[in-house]
Amino acid sequence: MNEPAVVVEGVEKSFGEVRALRGVDFAAAQGEVLGILGPNGAGKTTTVNILSTLVTPDRGRAAVAGYDVVAEPAEVRRRIMLTGQFAALDDMLTGYENLVMFGRLLGLRKRTARARARELLVEFDLTGAADRRVGTYSGGMRRRIDIACGLVVRPEVVFLDEPTTGLDPRSRQGVWDLVGGFREHGITTLLTTQYLEEADALCDRIIVIDHGRVIAEGTADELKARTGGSYCEVVPLRLEDLPAIVTALGPLLPPESPAALAPDADRLAIPAPDGAKTLAEALRRLDAAGVELVDIALRRPSLDEVFLHLTGHPAEAFVDSEVPA
Amino acid sequence: MSARPALVAAGPHSGAWLTDLRAAPVRLWQWWVLTIRMLVPAIKTGEILTSVLAPAAFTASFYIPLKTVMSFSGLGFSSYAQFMMPLVVLQAAAFTAIGAALRSATDAVSGLDRRFAAMPVGRLVPFSARMAGNVVRLLIAQAAALTCGHVIGFRFAQDWAHTMGFVGLGLLIGVAFTLGADVIGTASKSPETTTQALLLPPLILGMLSTGIAPAAQFPDWVQPFVRNQPVSQFATALRALAGDSQGNAGVADWATMTPALLWIGAIVVLALPFAVRFAIRRS
Image (tube, rainbow over all chains, first blue to last red; front, side, top):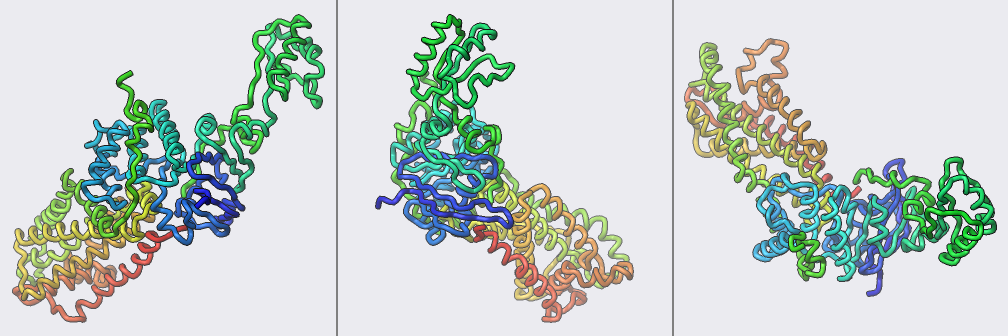
C-alpha cells in the first residue's frame, strides 16, 4: 500500500471551448503538504474539483487515498475534507448545530456527534459562539467553524482552497499550525493559496500550474534555484559611486549585461553562485576601491520572483477568481 | 499570554481536532438530519408561523372585500366562502413554493450543495430532504387554510372520500409547486431574484382564474385563458370535491379531475428530471 495519497496522471478537462486542463501529472505522498499555485484560470480549482469528485476528467486518471475518483467516488468522499474560500455552512443553524449535523451526515451516533461538536468548539475557540447562528459569525469565525465541520471525522486527504484569504493573523496562525498537525499525523494536504510566503512556509513541495499544465514542480528552494539562485545586492552610500562599483566588481558582474544600470537605480545586484564566497569577494573588492556602502547582502529570490519568472504574471495576478464548476 | 486562542495555544499537539472517528454514513440518518434542518430553525425563529399567517391574510384580504360583491352577482353557491375556498388552498401552496425556492437557492449559493456533493452524502438525499421539509410546511399551510375557510363559513358538503380527495389533491398540487420551485431556486442560485420573480405568477394566475369569480364575469377576450389556465382547473377540481349544499359545485368525475391531474403531471414531468440532474451531476 505504497501508492501516493494523491495521484494525477494525464488529466485533461475541457468546459466547452475552454481547455481547463491539458494533461496534468503530479502526485502527493501520504502526509505531504503540496502547494498548488498558478495564476487566475490556470486550472487549480478544476484540479481540486476533479480530486474531490465534483468534476469528472475527460481523460487521464486521478486517485485519492487509493481510490479512483471516477470509478469509486463514494470511497473518495469518505476520506476527504474540502474547505473553500467561502465557508459552506447552514447559516440558519448555530455553530454547534452545524457541527452536529455534519457529524450525523458522516454517520456518527447522536451522542457521539454531540460530544465531538463540543470538543471541536473548544479546540477552535468557538465555545462562546456555539449557540449563535452561523449567519452572525465574523469572517474568521466562519472559517474556523467551516474547517471544524470538515474535521468531525478523520480525513485522509485535505483540500484547503485559499484557507487563509482574508483572515486575521491570529486565525491564520491557527490554520498554519493545523496544517503542521496534518503533516505530523500522516494526513495529506493539498493547498491552494494566493500568499506565496504561505506556500513557502507550509508546503513540502509546490507545483505551479499555468494554462492547464504543470509547468514547474519541486520544493520552494528548488524553484528558487531554478530562477537563478541567490544574488548579492550592493547599495552604495552615494549614488555617484555606482560606476566605481561596476569597475571594482568587474568579473563578478553578469557577462550578458555588465553594468546595465537603470538610470534611477540606487543599487546593484550580481549573481552569487558561490553564495557567501561571492559576497566576501565583492566586499574585498569594494573595500579595496574605497566605496562606502549602506548595505551589502546575500539575497534569495522570493517566490513572487519565481512566479514572475515561470509564468510571466506578477504575483498580484494570483488572486483567485476561478469559478467553482 | 494565558489568553491566547485555544487553536493557537493548544496547537495541533493538543490533538483535539484529531480523531479516530471515520465516516460511516447512513442514508436514512442523512435524510432525517437534513429534513430536520429545514424545520427546526423555522420553528425556533417562529418563521414557520408565516405558513399559518399567509393563508389567514389571504383569506381576510379577499373574502372581506369580495364577499358582498360576489353575493350580488349570484354564484349559485351557498356562500362566497364555499366558492373561493380552493383559491385559499392554492395560495397556501404557492406561498409554500416560494419558500421552497428561497431555501433551495440559498443551499445552492451558499456552497452547501457543492459541499454535500464532495461528502459521502447520498446523491438525492439533500433534494429529497428539502422536499420532505416542504411537505411538512404544506401540511401546516393546508391546515391553516382549511381552518380559515371554516371560520368564514366553508364546509365540506360531501362524504369523507371526497373530503380526503380534496385534501389529497391540495397536497399533490402543493408538491408539484414546491418541486418546480425547488428546481428554479437551485438553477437560479439567487434567493432574492427567485422569490421576487415567483411572487408574480400566483398573483396573475390567481386573479385571472375561476377561483375568484366565474369565467363569465371576465371580459370576453380573456375568458379562454381564464377558463383553461391551471389554477382554474385546480379550483374547479377542488370545488367539485368539496361540494356545496346548493348542488352547483360540479361533479368530481374524471372529466373534472383529469385536467387538474394532467397539469400536476406536466409540472412533475418537467421539473423532476432537472431535480435529479442537479442532484447527481458531475460536470
